[in-house]
Length: 111
Length: 113
Image (cartoon, rainbow over all chains, first blue to last red; front, side, top):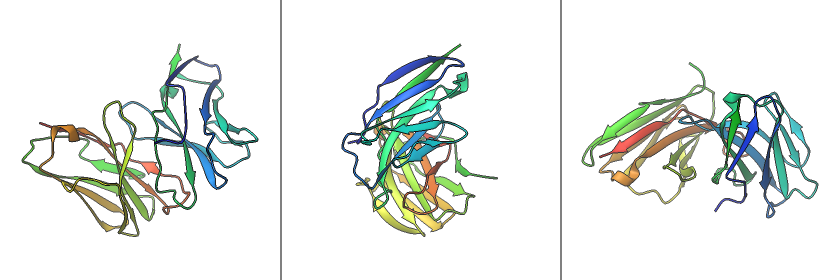
């Protein structure tokens, strides 16, 4: 079973920030939080990952709560091309090959 | 070419056929993976190879046979498949089987009749 819980679907207006939540209440100290997305009929695409500090790259920002039991992926200015299924995954350094995808959040961007 | 490529992109086969899926990565990675994505189900890890050695077989039926001749190429040989094996088969690679980010190919959409 996936170690994360995400809402099954969300929508967001184009140009606005999309905030995707993820609960990982059983996360352990050596587990990182990863985000991937999968656009229809394509392979998953890496977005960002973090351990306990907030992270930002050219695609998104990742906000991890202080207790690390939840996180939020932020797409600052959503476009129609951001319509995809977004997966939040926790993965440890020692067993990172056991990447387990849950059902993800289907994000729809409306014009 | 760059990234992870997969061929063919689409495949239709009968239950008695034998076919192979090919994956190639141009990223200099050492680890490669096969995933299966069935309709309305999460991605499932099938096999992991690290430096050409299989390090994980996630209870995959023997009708799926992986082969990794070198760190850049990964095959999935298919024989006597069932209709329920119809799915999107995704290949991924990473620098090592550790915390490193996995990069996915576009997938092969397989239909078994």
